[in-house]
Amino acid sequence: MKKFFLTMLISVVSLSLVSCSDVEETAERTKEEPIKIIAAHNQTTTESPYQAGLLKFKEVAEEESDGRIEVEVHAGTIGTEEPELVQKLVVGAADVVLVSPGFMTKTGIPEFDFFALHYLFENYDHWEQVLDGEIGKEFADMVNEKSNNDFKMLGYWSAGARHYYGKKPIEEMEDLNGMTIRTQSSGVVADFWEQTGAIPTSVSWGELYQALQQNVVDSSENSYPYFVQQNHHTTKNGKYITETGHDYTTRFLLTNGNRFDKYPEDIQEILMSAGEASVEAEREAVTEQEQEYKQIAIDAGAEVNQMDTSEMEEVAKPIQDELATELDMTETLEKIRELKQE
Image 1 (spheres, rainbow, N blue to C red):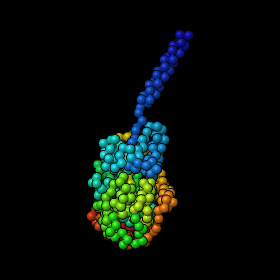
Image 2 (image 1 turned 180 degrees about the vertical axis):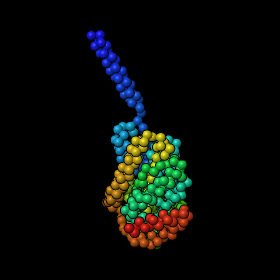
Image 3 (image 1 turned 90 degrees about the vertical axis):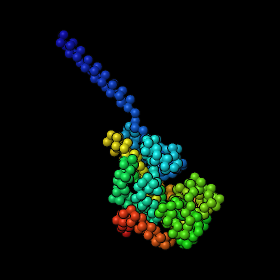
């Protein structure tokens, strides 16, 4: 009988110890704070394709991590200019941001000027072949290496096909002679527009509606979702849209590589998976919105026309060649051109 009670006592004590251990472990897990990710773009409208992309990033990261990751999405609320967002990325006030090729060039990686070259891509399929293949991987490795791991590429987003819009339609390149156009006022973009006869002019995005309305600039260029959401097509100098398709625009979804490397391996994999999902969602949103906002512009009275862009494409080629030589990237340019032929 004594032996029986002794055995029961040992069993009870053992169960108590296990229960205490489980409670302590549960308490410890409860204390664990989720990894908070601040994801931001500079567009102030939540209708932007950028928003669709970051919301998909949030959805996948939170679901696949089972709540271990929490993502806050900011649409222009922590910065409407790229330098603000990138500064926050470097110092830790943001974890995922979206930037353009022009800004990456300013960070000391001139190779990214390649993505600002006009008529580099023939169409969306060509653009995707380049970015989703070997060349895209090379650029991702480059940004990581040249930034000393401050920047790590999570994916290539699209900002759509950019077109001309202005105070008059253009039927041929010479119609641009003497016209001011809001675009980059230096670098390969400005070189291209100068060669067409236009006058590149710098106007901030937030002031462009007024500039078009008050005849400060004759024209601008962008993709349908962005300029129609800002009602540029309703202005005095934004009514006429010519589908030049001069730039299939690339945007870079970046995280801080140094912080990324400190996350557990499974968290890293989830963030990369969320990045891939965001790429698909954002590109899909761009495709849908390009058609949607083109129709909105037409319904509001804007006039849309097409033109033969071959003369403009010929203007672009020597600018492409010159930059490729300057950056020692002639081979890369040839690869891109070869993919155009496939």
